[in-house]
Image 1 (cartoon, rainbow, N blue to C red):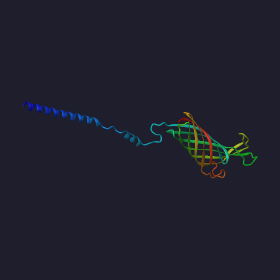
Image 2 (image 1 turned 90 degrees about the vertical axis):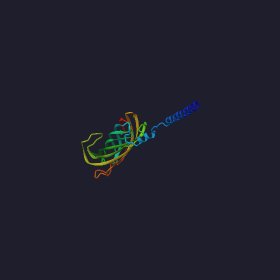
Image 3 (image 1 turned 180 degrees about the horizontal axis):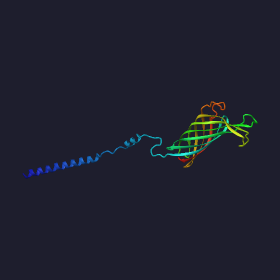
Image 4 (image 1 turned 30 degrees about the vertical axis):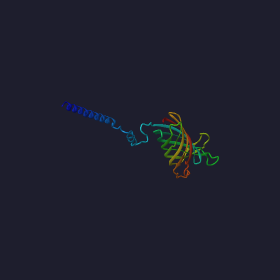
Length: 232
């Protein structure tokens, strides 16, 4: 009887030890199978699916106002112009704003020795769209495009003597026009708040229907420089 009880006790001890060992293995198994962390790819995917804007997220934007002077020809005569620009800069690479220019030509005589001289003058302006390439570099390139309209006048000056003396001056005729003026500029970052731009453009204008003007007296190349001040 005692031998039987001893045998049963040994068997019970072995079964308990086996069960405890199985529980330990199972617990270690649970520890090895920890819940997987979310893969970072999902985060990137959600960011890439966001709507992108011109200004971008978290990027700096600015503005500038500039002064411009240029040389061109109007109706075959030397012309000098000046103007100004006010623009908003989106993400350093695109300026959008308004620009305007005025111009006048040298005086000329239709008949040698005549006391009557003539000259052209006028102005134009409109919307400015200006893509800027590599704006963070000290020297970079911009492509301003002006779209708008303006007017040109042919003036008569009597008894003119150089430089400014004359008896009378009046507008003989005037016409309005539409204009598109694409250009290219090389910009220099002189300071954080100042840029110098040197470049040229080409004016495309609608034809003028008047005997005092040639069909497109303003069409042609211009060359000039600008000073720009602001937050770039």
